[in-house]
Image (tube, rainbow, N blue to C red; front, side, top):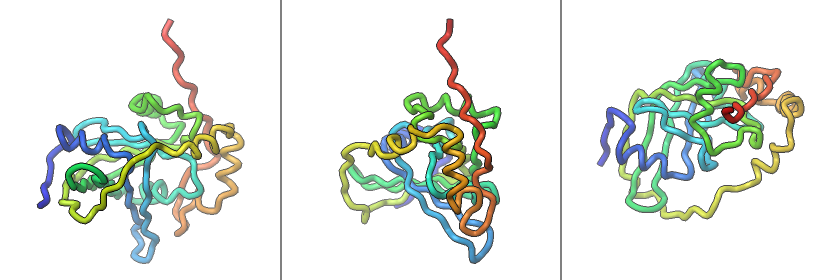
Amino acid sequence: MGKIYERIDGRLRDFIEAQHIFFTATAPLSGDGTINLSPKGLTGSFTVIDERTVAYLDFAGSNAETVAHLRENGRITLMWCAFHGPPNIVRVHGRGEPVFRDDPRWAELLGHFPSIDPTRHGLRAIVVVHAELVRDTCGYAVPFMSYDEDRTLHASRFERETDESLDAYFHKKEHIEQSIDGLPGLPLPLPPLPALPGPEA
């Protein structure tokens, strides 16, 4: 029924990269802390960096629970479901970290997402996950569902923001700089978005 994998490659990688949505699960160390589960979408915002490392873009929103939990303890699980074709569920359990705009690794990591214009989505971090356990399960009870297209609402909402107005937006939200449980979330003030490299001469 289920299988454990040593690496993310071959058909496993093909399956992950073909899905239009995945889910992230994190939690604080506190036994009574708030567990967080988030859906992630937008074509091109997830990538497999190597056989043990994946990454996804963390866009502007009204919370920063995942970022806060990763800053505290690094634990994260990613999950993909097959909503068409043969049934399958894949989970990557590992350690993650949010890489922020002022991190020297930013430009190199962003290069793994060539189809995404970071200026349109209020990109605030790149989450890098190092896999410790990769496994699949049957997914027999997951329903068939069809993908129509990505929503355009996120880009239309945040492409109007400058670095300054986005920082102001984050300061107004209760659970951006701190999580629901009071853990450090997104570091503010928000550093400016690094300039994209220009075309070679």
